[in-house]
Amino acid sequence: MICTTEQIVNLDECPQKLRFSIDYEPVRVTLATALYKSLAEGLKSGLPAQAESKFMQLAAFPGLAVQGLNVYEIARHHSKLLEILTTYLLGGAKEKWHRPPTQRLAGDLLYRPQSYVETGKLRRVVLASSWSADRELEERNSWRSIGDIVAMERPMIVNVIVIGQLRNGFRNSFWTSALSHPQNRQIRFQGAALNATGKWNPIRRENSVLDTLEWLRLMQQDNCFESLVHSFEIPIPEDSERVHTQLQAMLREANALPTGNLYRRRSSCYRAFYPCQFANVCPKGFETPPETLFQLKK
Image (cartoon, one colour):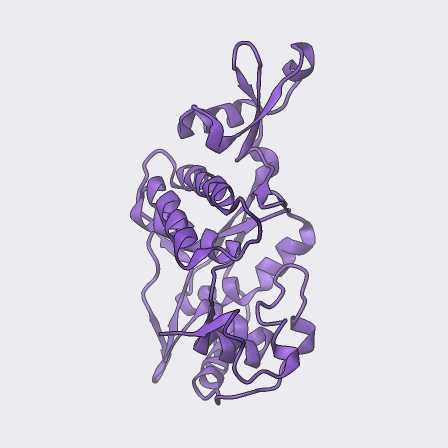
């Protein structure tokens, strides 16, 4: 089988998680999964509108794994977030981003990187609710980064986009929220002018008449990107041959993974950044996850 970066990550976290993820998928898609899938659609097509459209399609079917009566508003909010993120990442040229080809590491061991490739380097986008030095250290050492780097023998640039904490289905960050003057309708994000000119009203991106490029221009004018965008480069590790050998061993393990209940690594069930999506069913010993939560992949 062809193993993807994400499958290697799942194996590293827990063999049972990899087994479940190969055989099953959630009945409804999580917000995180929908965000990354839709962003990839926009970047690979070079069209921000494709990212927005893809998210709304996923929200319609199979639906978002969110609770509440305002699911449509939540979906529209995140689709507009994706449009502006894709526009920012593509830049003025709006050139399509490309995935690397599948790599044959040794014999029949096939590995499919899930980063993007540009001249001489790889590129990866991380969407984060917040950012810290500890989180950067985790991403630098994650198989999502190191696996692709050693497989492609290229360094990687990681673009971190802070999209804000999720509160009641919405995210409050400068990508999606601004302040509007009640009289002249001027849009601002931060700065001394807000305190000097009276009361300003909050406005969400999806309710604004500004086009995307103007919204981004105003963000730049108010120096918003400094707190929202972080980039760093990960070089090819000095022990790349050893890491490459380890990656091959993990591919062999993934290809030989048995069916049924496997041992699980309990430390991976409720990790701070990536709690396991199967955590609520795996400890209960379900050989087949409940149909209300998961379904067999077609």
